[in-house]
Amino acid sequence: MRIQTFLLSCALALVTLSAQAFDRPFPDIAKRGVMTPANYPAVIINEKTRTLSAGARIWNQDNMIEMPSALRGSEMAVNYTESDTGDIDRIWILTADEAKRTLPLLPVKPAPVKPTPLPAPVTK
Image (cartoon, rainbow, N blue to C red; front, side, top):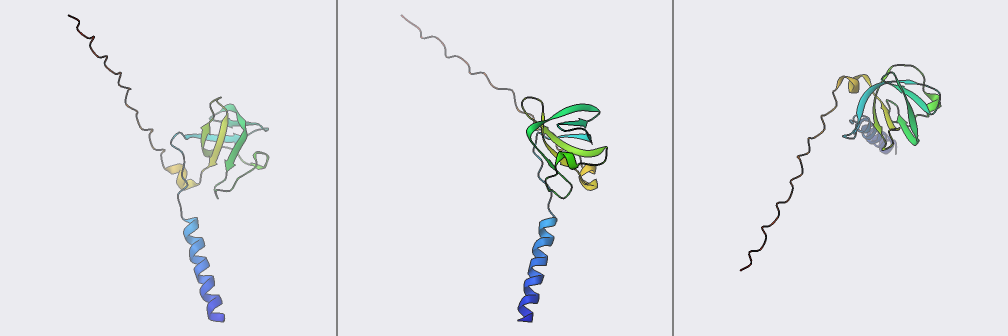
């Protein structure tokens, strides 16, 4: 019985260690900035006062959701995304290792190719 308990604890420890060693997936449209909390619903990103959207989410360094009113400190390195209206809708507070990495460049979309019109039919 004790051996089973020991083996189960070792298996659970291995599972939790692998879960903590993952890279957070940031969307391709994420931008990098420096954030300082302000009175809700405002945040200061790159020295500009911005507004959080109604359903904004903020993830801390442990990838847990943080309430805007609970944020403490200043000049936190963050990745963020904007909604269609220009409000901030998602913020990830970065760890020191994540802040050192650069954001991947957005893929360049080729210009749309305009279809060539067919020649007019020849009438005789």
